[in-house]
Amino acid sequence: MTYSMVIPVYKKDDKQDISNYRPISLFTSFSKILEKIIFSRLYKHERENYIPSDEQFGFKENSSMERVS
Image 1 (cartoon, rainbow, N blue to C red):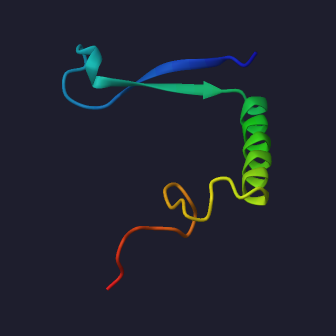
Image 2: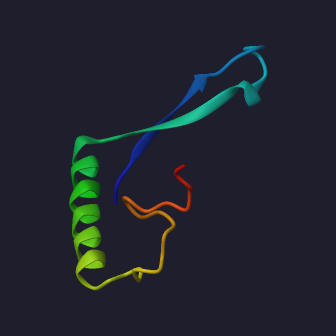
């Protein structure tokens, strides 16, 4: 199991208002390395097995629905 330390980071305005803070998770180096290994293996598997298909454009490198004029 991986643990992280969550710390509040001040954004703006009144420091007494808790909604003016955002939580940031600090992970150990081991969990960051493990995350990168898992991501690279899943990404490679996805590309080798055409998941998602070539017709899928969302969240895919070098693919966009924007028009270039």
